[in-house]
Length: 504
Image (tube, rainbow, N blue to C red):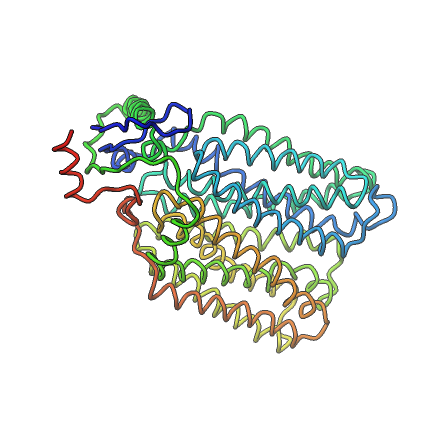
C-alpha cells in the first residue's frame, strides 16, 4: 500500500487520516478461499434474520390470544394486526434510513452492534407490555432496530464475503428469515397451549426466547470485524491492512498453503463522509437504470408477499374452515418452501448469473401465482393443495425477493451502499406493509373467491413486471469485485493516480 496523507486529517478526532491511498485490500478479500473466518461472519451477522422471522411470525400468531380476556393486555386482534403492524413497518422504514446514513458515516461494525441492541431491548420490553400504548411503542422501536439491521448487515456481508461466493451467501442469509418463521409458527403452537402456559404468560415467553437467542448472536457478533473496504476509504487504511494481514495468516494456517497474489489495486482519495445530496445524485442520476431495477424488484416482491402470506391465515379459515389453532402448521410448511428456494438456487446466481436467475425467479413465481389464482377461482383447491401451490410459488419468489437485497447492496458505489439498501428497503417495506394491507386486507377477508383471486393476480402481475425489468436492466455482477461493479466515488482515474505518484 502507498499513501499520500492529507495534512488536515479527517476532522473527527477518531485517529483517521484522509489522503490518497493505493491499496489491494478489495482484491485480497475477494481471492480468499472459504474458511472458518467466513463462517464466523455468517453466524454473527446473518442469523439475526432468523430472529426477525421468529418474532414477526409470533406476533401474527398471538394476535388472537392477546385479544382474549386474561391475556394481561387490553388490546384487540385488529389493533395487533393493524395498528401494531403499521407501527412496526413505520419503525423499520425510519430505522433503515436513519441507521443506513450512520452506517455509511461511522462504519458497519458500530452500527450492526447498536441496531441489534436496539432490537433486543425493544423486544424484551414488548414482552413486559401491560398497556396497549406500551405494546405499540415498542413494536415501533423493534421495527426501528430491524430496519437498521438490514442496512448495516447487508453492506457488511457483501464487503466481507469473497466475490466467488457473495451471491449464494447473501441469498441464503436473507432467506434464513423463513427458518425463524418456521420456528415462530411451531413455537406459537406450544406457547399458546393453555394446558402448558397461562394466557398471560405464553406470549410473553415467546418474545423472551427471541431475546435469549439474540444475546447469543450478540456475543458472536463482537468478534466480527469492521469492513476493511469501509476502513480504507474513510481514513483507516493502516487498520484495514492489519486486519486483512491477520485474516490471510489465519486462513493460510487453516488451509496449509499460501494464498495466490491479489488481482490488482485501486487508488482512492479518502473522505470521512458523503452527504445526502451526493448519494441521491449518484443513485438516481449516475445509475438511473439500476435505481429503476431496485425499485421494481422491491415493490414486486413486497406486493406478492402481501397477496399471499399476510392473508394466509384468513384465507385458510374463511374458505377452508381450518381451525385458528392449526394455521401455524400450514404456515410452517410454506415457510420451509421459502427457505429452500435461496438454499438450493443460490449457487446458480454465482454460476449461471444474476440477470438470468433474477429474471427467471421473478417471472416463474408470478406465472405460477397466476396459475394458482385460476385454480383457486375454479374451486379446485383444498387447504392442503393450496398450501402445496404456495410452496412452489414461494420457492421461486423467496429466491427472487432475496436477490433484491443482494442487487441493491452490490450495484451502487461503496460510499452509498448502506443508504442505497436503506432507501430501497424502506420503500419496498412501505409499499408492502402499508399500501399492501390496504389493498389486500378486504380482498382476502371478504369471503368472495373472486376478490382473493384479484389479490393473487395483482401480486403476480407486479412480480412479472419486475422480472421483465430485470431482463433488461439487471447487472451481471457474478464473481466480480464490488469495485468493478460500481467504482467508488472516491476512486481516482489512472491519469489522476499518475499525477499523485509524481507529486508524492
